[in-house]
Image (tube, rainbow, N blue to C red):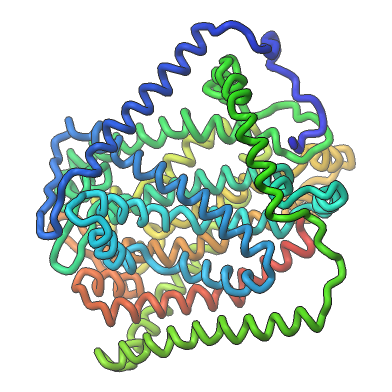
Length: 581
């Protein structure tokens, strides 16, 4: 079910081809797919070699190894992206469709996005190594898991919001036609959130790059493990203080980001335009050379015919999930009883976990261990608030400008993607030089480094929100002569507000996460440390001090959840009730 109500014409001078004989275009597409599969299999063989926990893995900084390292990093990134998409569908749908689960899953998501990668990576590595003894696959799973945790939360928040803010006429349409819940998801809910999901996926992919060094160079106690990849290559070059090899890593990263954008994200954003909900045809639409090339091929139609029986079988099997005939009136007494039972069970489990954690910390260090991170958290909180305000003032107008102009989107998308995808670690040599040369304190400069990993969530979500505003509403504003602040007040702010809130909440959580690598900056023998909770957790991780690490992570989660409850969750409710198209 496409949301575009009018026929989308083919490109001028190039009519839509019907099924025909295979041409050179089909041969090129088939060859490209075979090469891609061969490369994935060839690179994937390196993930299952033998390995023992006491074995030291060394990383070569020979530039000739960078193509292989780049392929290994890309494989991890796309495996993590696939896992993030599946998690997004399941988690967001459960939270949006169950009022009781929502009360647990959404606060849990707040906590999950606030728990820093370095905080649980040590535990994850130990578990995966035990799960796959004698194989490097355990470390690979730990690296993919770390990247997954930097991608999944933003996508889940965005898709959850698209589900709870589904336009009323689409909800009524689904119930009137008695769609099965399976059909409702694939024909109504997923198309409604497609644009936001694609742009959030693009941003989350950039978030994965940001933590690439942390995921490929893992410390467990006094043992350090390094996997082949661009992140570990850069980490090794930074540790050696070799600016030349850091430059090679930056160049490789730029080529990877631009290539992935051109071959994957650009076609995907152009394809997602078909799900835009509008009544009039746009004068200019997103274009992609790769997508246009694929549309000239017969393979999509052939695969569609081959997979149609599978789709029909899944549709029939989806009937077990029931029909979308939710009652408009519910039994209040029955709901109240269920709420009480659910609250008692969930509250009991949470209380048991908190008591057990308190006993563990009390036996090791005493509960006074929370005092220092609580105070340090105030410094990091101040940086997060300053960053969020500045990013809003700077990037919301830029995002609206980009989202309203398909031509500008084509130019800005790869540039923004490159900027958003660069790990802060890659820029540490420049940051150390700049801070020392200008005398700028890391306590202030840390905000700039945190911005490298957090501000882009606001920009990308604003772009997605602006692109989702129907063209006919913009044309109506033009016809009425609404300009300036009135246009922002009547159209732009209501149109982008739901997406902005999603970007704001993930930017806030991302800033807390980024503080781990932004409050401690190292290049060669020079280390600059800021006062803050991120530096506290990074030091506890380096020392292998689990009580201090748990206390730091718990305090960071407390700050994030409190901020989300007091600010972002209220804005979410406002977006649901007043600003959904």
